Image (cartoon, rainbow, N blue to C red; front, side, top):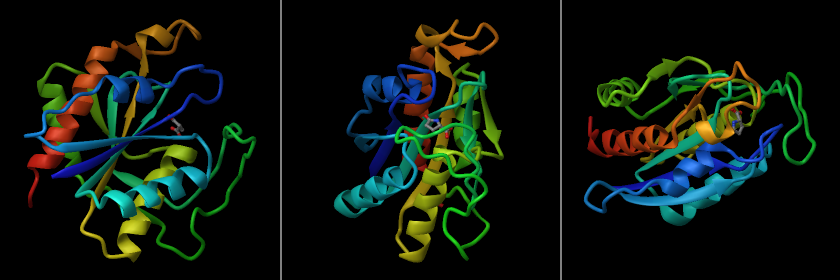
Length: 203
Ligand code: PCA
């Protein structure tokens, strides 16, 4: 079982991205999965094309994309990707699209094809806060999630895809007092569990 996992670089007011820090620290035994890690820029369009290139190159069985959600206290496994971009801030190349479809005339939404509920239950079972989320937002993360599912769908590829938002890690905390943070060990453990549950899922 080959799993491609992605994380994003820092964006907005942060100088690190918790998804990237956690991906660096993640180790998965070969018996669990052959894990390929790639880092993506927080840039509309280019993040999707880099991911689809990586899918072509590595032909993974599953893709798990990870991003930071600064306003969330729990690890959230996304259930649905929607065909809209409504950026609140510029991406890392200064682009800020508002109210445009990701792919014109394409489906309004796609569901994740990884076992969302099993992943959430397993993470909670390890004592780490996790929830299903029904919105990945309308920024770069949702575009990547939608872009992956759309690419897999139109090319009829046997590839599962999912998206996980992780909170800020404690090292980043305190920038805005009210914003939640999680220790990096828990974030890494949650990603490891997500890889394991995705690899184990054969239905
Ligand atoms: N989070 C942003 C984009 C990059 C990231 O880590 C998002 O939720 O869209």
